[in-house]
Length: 93
Image (cartoon, rainbow, N blue to C red; front, top):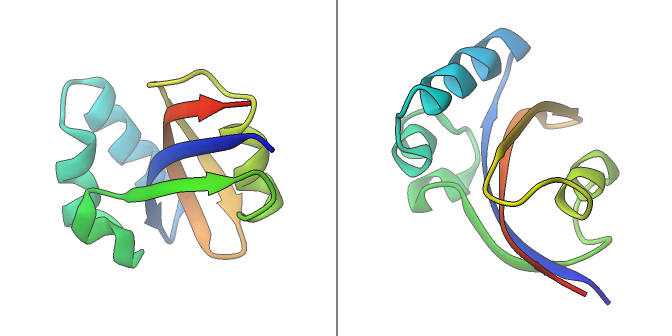
């Protein structure tokens, strides 16, 4: 079963998500932005979600993690929890 490692930033609005994505694309550190802004407990660890298997996360999230480009900021991705920015750090089949 495919596995991946990723980190994310969870916020309430699409606007906030876009604003943070722009900051990261302009050179801000993903982990530092996650620590400051993410509403997920993983924010303390720079948004690190560790390694997980396909199907463990909500479908919208899973789809991007297992098909998106590595080491690139994806999003905003809307889920029942809010809006995510997502960086896939590794993936294996």
